[in-house]
Amino acid sequence: MNTIESVTDKLANIFPNESEIPSEYAYGEPVHQKEYLVNGEIKIWNGAVQDIFSPVCIQTANGTEQKFLGTTPLLTEVEATDALNAAIGAYKNGTGEWPTMTVEGRIRAMEAFVKAMKSKRTEVVKTLMWEIGKTIKDSEKEFDRTVEYILDTIEAYKKLDRSSNNFQFEQGIIGKIRRSPLGVVLCMGPYNYPLNETFTTLIPALIMGNTVVFKPAKIGVLLHRPLLEAFRDSFPKGVINVVFGRGRATVGPLMTTGKIDVLAFIGTSKSANIMKMQHPRPNRLRSVLALEAKNPAIVLNHADLDLAVKECALGSLSYNGQRCTALKIIFVQKNVVDTFINKFVKEVEALKWGMPWEDGVQITPLPEPEKPGLLKALIEDAEAHGAQVINTGGGTIEHTFYAPAIVYPVNSKMKLYYEEQFGPVVPIVAYDKIEEVIQYMVESNYGQQASIFGTDNDDVASLTDNLINQVCRVNINSQCQRGPDVFPFTGRKDSGEGTLSVADALRTFSIRAMVAAKDIDVNKEMLTDIIKDRSSKFLSTDFIF
Ligand code: G3H
Image (tube, rainbow, N blue to C red; front, side, top):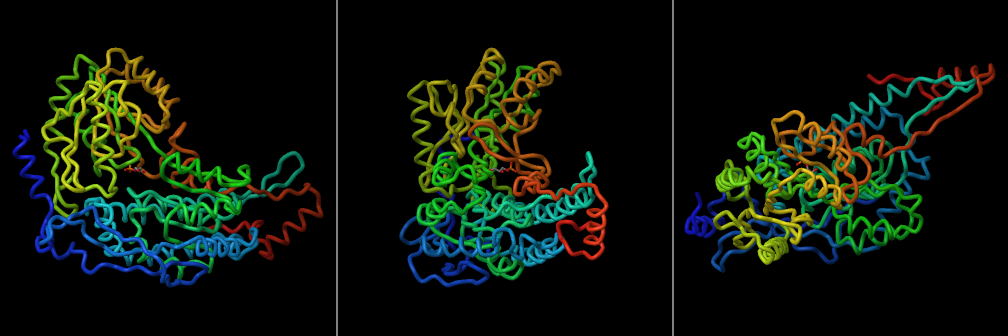
């Protein structure tokens, strides 16, 4: 068990000296990025820049300081508009080279990209780790999972194409149905999965023939720099444009033009709503959104508590709880709550704190500068309404490091009961009757996932049926998570719009379009000749292996 002395001691020594960083993980000199990508050209920016600091602090002669990683361009409306115009030009109202390219052609471009991307693994992974404080193991996993996602997307696209290469005959009409692109996509990802989650929208958007303006989030920016050349060299000019800077300066002006056809955004519902409302013709805007969540773990009194504790600790505190799928509130039935808490505190106290490159580390510094203060305020609010931090040293702040805090007993008067904390704070609620938890889910603004822990088949089955229309994934005796990426990932209410999985995303970023002809001889002859001469890409029956 932790004591306050051991916690103080651990925190006092949590940040290293520069010389203590193993050479293979050392960051090196700051990177001053000037490049951005517009219309197939890597342009150089000489204007204002954003300083990038790591959540990792270093002990220096001047005290503990956040590691300075470099700078990124703070582009303006002008460059963002250039990027939009490039994407519009490449789409050319659906007649551009990319939207009309054969499926094979687009697959070849994507294969070239993934090959070039793989060659940048070391650089991207190391920058990812330093920029967002994700453990080296998870940073590597994020990169590899993204590569796998692209390869799976290529396979899914082939499968989709194979299923649509036949003609259909219905009621005297010959039909050829395929999926077509939607237009210009504005793509923005989150800081917690800056590569993976961004690419789960960017890649399907591109492969379906759309053109893209991509703007990384505020945090997790430099890691995209090594990929600019791969983007430039793999796709026709203007198909993918990458801009950097503040959302207000770059994204707002683009939305107000009404020329964005799809908004692909992973972040908060507040930002999503602002952007959607900026679009002058909302009926033309399609949105693909992954937003906040407050996924509950529900521990029934017959649960295997050891299993529940392990999954709840993993679910609530992997990457410091900074996952949209994290367990953000734990409901435990009253007659087992003491035992659960006892075991849970031990499990959480055993998690290793440290720097992201350390072996076996689980809790690392937080990249959002305002986060420790926000978490502190949530805990103060909970304390004012009768809860306490029940693990020793929980909630202690050391610069960017926040010691995970378990808060109990949480109730409906507290902000922690409703609000997404997105950080290492775990609220526990004791409940009497399962109806209280179901009602919580009914009234919640969020509807992404839930986890049920129990061993009684009837109880688990009945709770599953009660929850499945409140959320989009019910996990049994397992933490909430997005993967495997072939499974649908979506949310109800304020948690999302549209479905993302390898296969679903291809549908999300496209629309069914068809050619129809009366089943008469003149049409049949014409279609036969078109197919034989390969004079139309849409009417093609080529089979891709
Ligand atoms: O931030 C949300 C991520 O999509 C979560 O993905 O469940 O695989 O960590 P994960």
